[in-house]
Length: 431
Image (tube, rainbow, N blue to C red; front, side, top):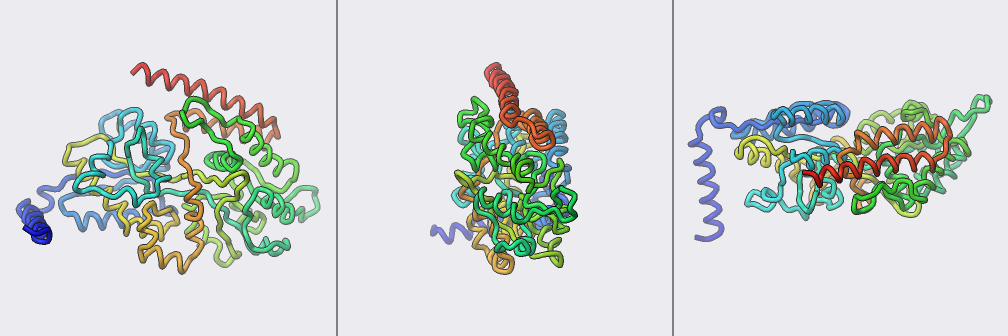
């Protein structure tokens, strides 16, 4: 039998099996998916993609539920997993995959990927896959991934005598900010700012990474976020606020200042791209660019991935893989990316007509892809959000609100982190 004849026979067999299965409702496999997208970050388009899956896969009933923000979704999933009622598919923020991996909650995808109904991993961004790779195996696929970008007010640049081009280096951030910052009412305080800082999260990783530092060493045996390079990076950002008086800080972002022409630059997620483009219309000409570099270029990978929980029957696991494969296909990733600004993880999606048209009509959508080669996974320790993130928030207050000693602050975070790291390593050994 020729290859073509075999394919026709196989297609006919699949059709007959579907017909013999009877009405869709009588043999449907139910799959539950939890996500963390809201109206501003792609929920309508994502839910439509899921509806399209149901319309074209009558043997599977996909139920979609909003689980809350990344943090609230994590809490909900932990309770669900402990209670034996976890969803089949979940959207997890980059630093939250690790918790479930080490507790055995995630389903290894290698057999699905390499099976007859598999996919070509070479089509995916390898840096994005790094976030869902543990001990050489894949435990999820990138979906609503992002990097921080510089959003900037071109009008404010030109009013300050600058070309409407984003800074490419730290020196240019300082140079541009000094020209932009102004005390308009003469009270001795800056009220128009070059750039802003808000509670340290992934941008901490971006700034120290651009200066050649890393949060952890490669072997995950020590926190290195207090290295001389990291201290230098944090001292520079502190100086932008307190020495040069050109940066805004208030514990939250300066978005309100940005929309009222009092903030020239802000580092925000590409997930905000579609929303920011819409908001800026009629206010000012908004530019979008990759992050600036210093000793190197560095952009942390944010957003989320889709994982399969190790739960349900074999039929549900197969069906969940079918859902995941559809949602992360070339066309569907291009479609979701074009409507939101999130990054499409497949190279083939870049050449899909949907994204090609998007890039042609709105070139600002390209900015995040310009730093894909310098995009890095976020810390992969299960206590990052419970232990380290709160300490970085405290450090932000020390650094900016109190104008405190940056080195002492980072040394303390590293000390606490290494204690937590040792306890975690011990717990793994004891299992």
